[in-house]
Length: 103
Image 1 (tube, rainbow, N blue to C red):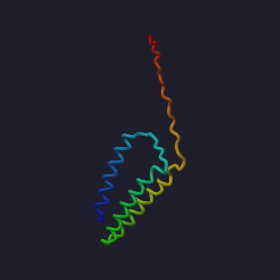
Image 2 (cartoon, helix red, strand yellow; image 1 turned 90 degrees about the horizontal axis):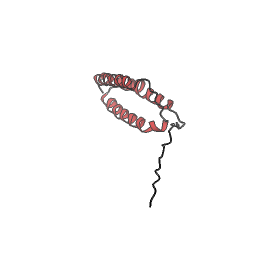
Image 3 (cartoon, rainbow, N blue to C red; image 1 turned 90 degrees about the vertical axis):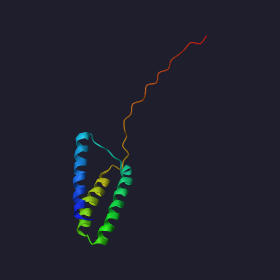
């Protein structure tokens, strides 16, 4: 994978994350680790596919950069996800019942 591709993805992801951070503000996100399994698997399989293409083309440095700057943070953040289910407080809906006299 050419270096220009990594630079392009870096720029695209920087813009995306900046816009997302501005829209999201300071709302914390509490994810369970089980909710992150599929996204991590898709990410790692995509990286594995790109790794195979890069290695067969003789690009070793981008693979190392991808491992260091892509896979390592993703796995560390996945491990940081809570393995304990988060209880979301919910309010009980108020149910109204109308009583009608039938003659």
